[in-house]
Length: 246
Length: 378
Image 1 (cartoon, one colour):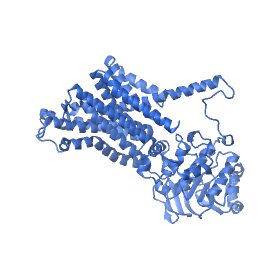
Image 2 (spheres, rainbow over the protein chains, first blue to last red):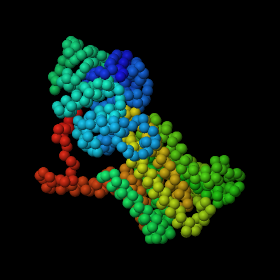
Image 3 (cartoon, chains in turn red, green):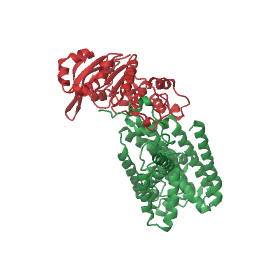
Image 4 (cartoon, rainbow over the protein chains, first blue to last red):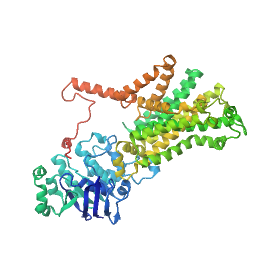
């Protein structure tokens, strides 16, 4: 298992530093929550790690430098992400979605043939994310929560070792949140997981460690209790606290 | 529908198509109409490729005339050289009298194997070079369409400008023989028709295999969410490139067969207008389906011949109107008409008879525990 090591990461858009010198260490097997007010740079940080935006500094996963590589190369190194709005292939079935996610290493001959059997990892993942009954359903017809799970499932079959999840429980019902939390807990047993989340209740229940970002910088880091006791965090979140509890 | 059911339906349709093209059409149609049909089927071969690249891959290929033209000119050059005989200049070059010797780039086309291979491989090579540049730079959507369109215009202008070596506006025409067979003989014209029909069926079978393969699924995924595919570790540029190159090869083959079937290739058959007409036919038929592009193109070409004989001025407007109507009311093309109609009926039935269990055709009920679509706070 590998960990993520970020040093002096900077992302600048038109003179505005969205991420302004972030150092971040996520040890192997951690379930790290990234929190912070809107515009703190959480999503931009994930964008930089996955190659979507240009950044300076250093991002290493398992000792390999990620910055400067194209998105699909970084993905092939075992780094996967989800988006705030679930992005699945709506005109394809759940099974096809997962099969594509599992297939980045396939050769041309396999690609040009039909899928004769479902890969075992796809079968296992269908069960893990609870979509066995929906396997032949078009992904576009899934409920919101199911789409989020399908996205997580796609990361699992992709066999990523680092999962970066952008608000995975946004818009989910209470039961769905619990199910997702349990899923992340199980997933992080042999993978490293980073979750961007606004939901404080969800965070208290499932976070192992927390990093608070504010204005592109790391404000505080530690366990949930440590971060909550940090006066600087309280200051930044004053006024956000009520909304965050919802 | 089950796998075997779908397979049976396809092979049933395939067999029916073969019977119509090989059995019914040659008997029912006059030689003149049959040669028109051969022309339409050539256009339909281009449409199969557009269905793949545009319908499945989302690449609005507004310049397929380029590849059609490359294939057509490659074939026409060979036929011209074969007609002239070894050592002689083709008739039009002698007529224009600008050249003493055959230009170097004409020479290899005297070889039938080279010329035949070039009809398909040359368009594929051009598509590969162009696609590699364009897709890696993430040129998409309207920009890609405009670029393709500009290429079609450029190629037509280039051909017109080089009258001495390409025949200019007149193009290449007046072919006597086709690999040793006299093209004036109706029997041989019929043979050309059979070759065209066979090639179209072969391309359809190839397209179907691609649609059903894992590659076909990936292509749809790239069309609908290119960035997501990138994050799964694929390079979408390569996925699109394959569809683009295959579509170019299909257009090239179509152009090559168009030459003996119709007897001419010239810039007005490959420029902007024909390139757009390809797209219109595919859109009207249904771009994402296998047969839609073929039926749409054949129907449009048929209507064009029939109506423009009687109303030459009004046809362009009618064609435009048809295109607008389909885009506005049937974005999936005529191939989706049955499905859309069925859904409408089901909805109306469900609306007029309220109460549980009144909508047998409606979607299956969602799982109770998970039926909570949220608003997604951002």
